[in-house]
Length: 125
Image 1: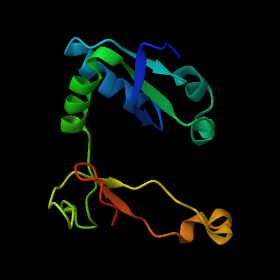
Image 2 (image 1 turned 135 degrees about the vertical axis):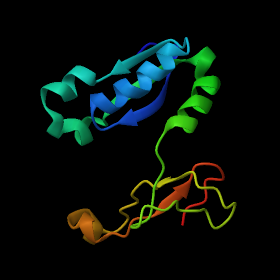
Image 3 (image 1 turned 90 degrees about the vertical axis):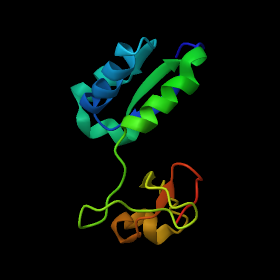
Image 4 (image 1 turned 90 degrees about the horizontal axis):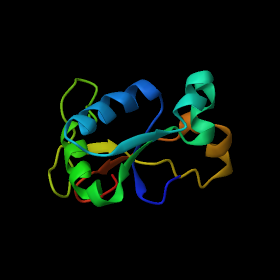
């Protein structure tokens, strides 16, 4: 990876990454994708190598992050309504990273409850 670039976001498939990359490119940001061709050749290994990484030049990272946070999709409840953070009441809620601290959840990850994280205040709930 080029030292002048930072990872802005990680996507499971390259098509998702290309949509965001196109938006940032249209705004004049210097972007590139990493591991795109590998995952396109075998999509089943996306989780194993960490997905398609969208890289942005480090000088533009903060401005690109603002745009990305405006256009990204946030989590909804079962009825399609926004989920709000209990701490700051923001609707910028994402799925929190899995913590799998227990061997049981490592063997049977589908039993682990989904946790959410607020993109604004970073509260996990």
